Length: 135
Image (tube, rainbow, N blue to C red; front, side):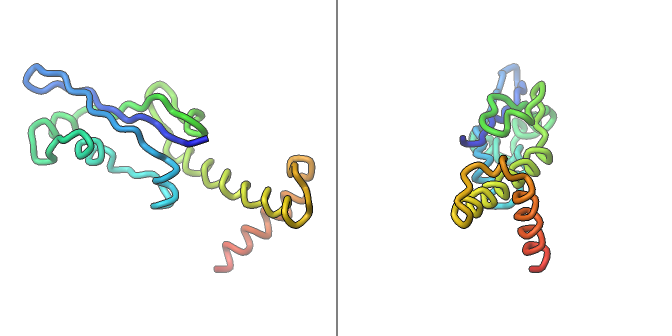
């Protein structure tokens, strides 16, 4: 399942309510940068045609980003409008690594359910980590 979340900011400028938002493709961010983007104000402003040199932008910066409608693994890290980016990043990496181990066990040992072989999973994980550390 795709990992995504909506980031939005509610603010008022000259008596007008603004609610710029953006759907964040978390998988794409992780694959492209290895981490989630932290400068979301700029991204949300750009996607909603708010100039970074405007008073609207300054008012937007005074408000918190609210997260909602998480999908996939991101759901576990969304609590009351706050998103635990660090927790999601670690869980996403662990999930990606485990997918590699599952595929290795399936292809080389004809094991379809790695959960049934915890010692093998531990050995594969140790070998994978050793390989990453030796680079």
